[in-house]
Amino acid sequence: MVQKVEYFNQPNCYRLSNGVAEAIVTTDIGPRVIRYGFADGENMLAELPDETVKTEYGVWKPWGGHRLWHAPEAIPRTYVPENTPVEFEAKGDNSIRLIQPTEKETGVQKEMTVTLDADGPRLTLHHRITNRGPWDVALAPWALTIMNGAGGGTVILPQEPYRSHDEYLLPARAMVLWHYTDLSDPRWQFGRKYVRLNVDAKQKEPQKLGLTDKQGWAAYAHNRMLFVKRFPFVAGAVYPDGMCNCETYTAGSFVEVETLGVFNTLAPGASAEHVEQWYLFKDVTIGDTDESVDAAVAPLVARTSPAGL
Image (cartoon, one colour):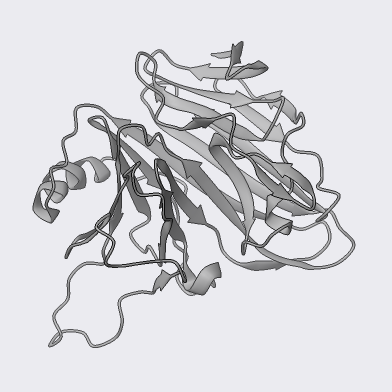
């Protein structure tokens, strides 16, 4: 069902629930998904009501949860405040569409349609960015999820399948670093099958990494829960940030799992779309080795192959 609730000190939120899982979206700010979890469980998303970033466009607040941006990142263009109400439309018993007013600073309009399956935890997020301005705009949809980092957590990104030098000579994919990325930081763990980024509240220096994720998934482990995000990879397409369709970032207990759509030039009135599907699993222990992560995560990811992406 879709039910109006007060949540996150916001009076006009809407809960999508099927008795197994639930998601809560805001309409006084956003568009945001501010909660996702099992109906009787903790929020897998962060709630950050007090964080702020000051820009020449005003005060931008991350709020927490899941948001829609457009890449590549730039200040102030990316940080247009999202602190005012959005239009919304319930679509049946399990879906809600959120429509942000056109950003006067950029001419961009953001939409997000959030749909919970009739049974089980799968949540589908359909993102759309439309150029409402008078000239072409080059961008990619950018879906950023701030995860619950209280007490730690681990981002899990898949490596490409191993192929020997004798079998294949060309590169597998791009892996992109930022100027502040420090691969000697102990929060990083690089294995044959997975790249892991551990959350540590004591480590305030930011870390970020992006890659071409041809496997089409990323995961986050927290308190014996596993969050899996599925998303498309379009072979031959151009992606922003040096061919990244997946990125992760952490600083202290703040941690994001981000995906990006294809980089396009949008004519006035044209739109770009990007779809994610989320899954959630209970009682998952990933251990601290590449092998233990694989044993715990790979069978669950195999159950998440999404239709229609």
